[in-house]
Image 1: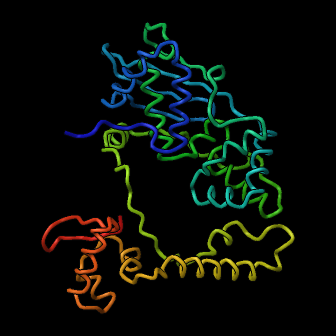
Image 2: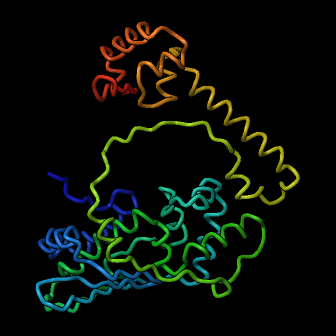
Image 3: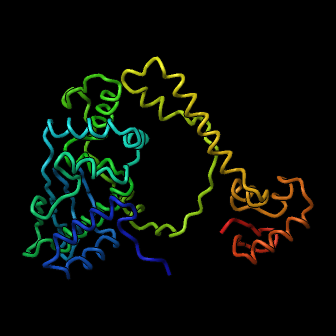
Length: 318
């Protein structure tokens, strides 16, 4: 039996669900019905554009219901302040330029007096169904699907507020380089995102990922890549090479600390991830009997877990 689809697997997806729950506090019985609709794949023709989300939801009638969500966009002055604040924090700028949404990004926006996430009083919803509840189950279904859409692409959140990925990243690069940000109307805008029905169905019906995801660290080939993308801070252009050398040195020290476990077997398990006793023996150039004896000891200490049987047996750190 497959597990039910989960909504809001990222912190930003969870924040969007929280906004929905605040909106639906009076009509709480509509939310579980909306989740059921979302899990059945009834939401289609979803379009995300600045200040507006539209979708159709197949319900009990032959004609799908039309759902619209509206959210105020930030004006250019507000976006200029946001971009300047984000560009002033190296970690935030680097994560955004890498396509990731910093977990505390909304704290930066709060200092500018705004939030990416809607309050109940600024989010307007409309559905063509006769239900007077707000949200109705169709609006709730679109909200849940949006949470999963935001999980996949967090840049849709600033898009809703009026600044798409291209304009936001162009502004960050310009401010970091000490230049002037291009006006939003001078950039080629991204087309509103429309999720094809079949793609959406595959995404929203996919099984939920495991709660425990094994992390296999790897030595980065270019540890100074974020610095190269960001460019040196204004006024330190002459020190760019020295800064990159410092970053590479720090990364080498960090990897040595990670890889330098006093127990060679533990270090090998950390490097290789799930692997066989034979692979460990070859990596450490030790007899396989010695490796297996040490693995039994680590299992007894609950430091190693085993998956598979026979030739498919794999060991990894707990």
